[in-house]
Image 1 (cartoon, helix red, strand yellow):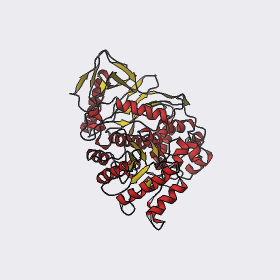
Image 2 (cartoon, one colour; image 1 turned 60 degrees about the horizontal axis):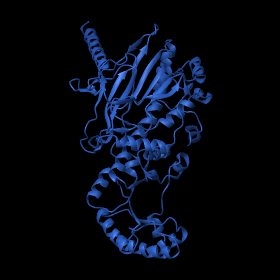
Image 3 (cartoon, helix red, strand yellow; image 1 turned 135 degrees about the vertical axis):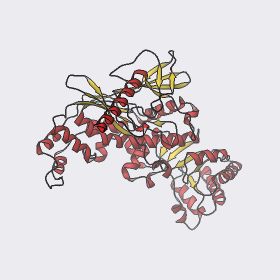
Image 4 (cartoon, helix red, strand yellow; image 1 turned 180 degrees about the vertical axis):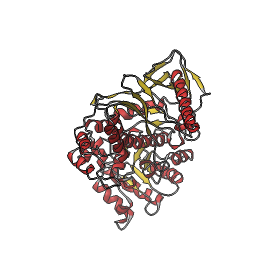
Amino acid sequence: MARLEAIYRTPLGLLTDLYQLTMAYGYWKTGRSEVEAVFHLFFRKPPFGGGYAVAAGLAPVVDLLRGFRFESCDVEYLATLTGNDGQPLFDRDFLLDLEGLELSCDVDAVPEGTVVFPNEPMLRVRGPILQAQLLETALLNLVNFQTLIATKASRVCGAAGDDAVLEFGLRRAQGVDGSLAASRAAYIGGCAATSNVLAGKLFGIPVKGTHAHSWVMSFDDEMSSFEAYAEAMPNNCVFLVDTYDTLAGVRNAIEIGRRLRDRGHEMVGIRLDSGDLAYLSIEARHLLDDAGFVQAAIVASNDLDEHTIQDLKMQGATIAVWGVGTKLATSYDQPALGGVYKLGAIREADGEWTHRIKLSEQWIKTSIPGMLQVRRFENEGGHVADMIYDEIAGLCDGGRIVDPKDPTRVKHIDAGLTSRDLLVPVARDGKICYGDESLDNIRLRAKSELARVHPGTRRFMNPHEYPVGLERTLHELRQRLIEQARGGVLDSLGS
């Protein structure tokens, strides 16, 4: 599987927002660059109005960490930046320190393909605050988009059921980066193949494709175009039948299918790309079956998504393969996951950890303090509940969790349930300790994980909210910090 540097040919130290560098400079300037800190990457709301997300993007994160550095050309560029007085933005000594920087952070993450829920840390960074700050933007970039697309693909594939879904989004994706990331994440989410040949080469994803309308239009008539294609590629014949008259196109495909069969080959199927897909697929299925092509698949495309597929299935469409492009690769109905990266704790000079919290007028944006881990409780039927706990304070006795959005919602967890912690070591002292994992294994994990999520949580509209809560002592700590912070604000206003 290709690594980031094989694609971009350069380290990605500058894949960051300027304010990460200005904060890093501030830490350096004030002598605080080595202060130990803990940050968490998480999202606040599931995408698409759904009830879950599928974690993706860890493999490129590992690549980023493995090759993270600032090259001489990077610091030379940074040396050209100036402040509003026209003077250099950064001291030369700071830039030299950047050039010699070696990561020493500990990183823990949820394995790709794991089903995750709001407020749970998908990734945790512990280390010198300057380094942890510099990683923020790139980590969010890599995890946000791929998690979004993997989740969208899981919904599309869920609507398709046992039918294959092909990712056809390259031509509409947001650039080269977006297309490659989308193809990879869509495969994790359940797609069977992609049309993106470069993604196939780089990531080992199966590739699929036949011909477009232009092939048919380049001949004098449709029959001639089908015959020529069958002559050129007898082992790859899925005929696009809707260039002129769809059902006439199906009959032409059947005729060429007979000629293929006489030569020892078999027509793979037909593709519908416009019109009433439910009606046309039903009529096409009758024609194919009556002609003895019961194994020929009907492939459909044309701005499909999970809702359209679900609706077509309810209408009795006989489509066996779904080509989903624009609305999958671009995440058409929600362009961003909204993942964030927040400080949870600082280690003081005496070695003691101090919890940090961010308040907001919006309760959903009030952060969770600590060095967080997620414990998932399960039974034979699947996932039951997740507990977010603080490794600094540890776990108390009992299995009560409190909803971080509504403290009046409390759930008791059965002591007999099995459990596992979701965050696993990825890097220790900057060195990668997470093994390479095949994309097929990640895809299988996603499939297994999704099967263990209650159908009510997986439904598209008004899904059941999966129980995620704070461990009791963490909830109490958070409440105290909120009260202290608000009290401090009131005191400062009063003075």
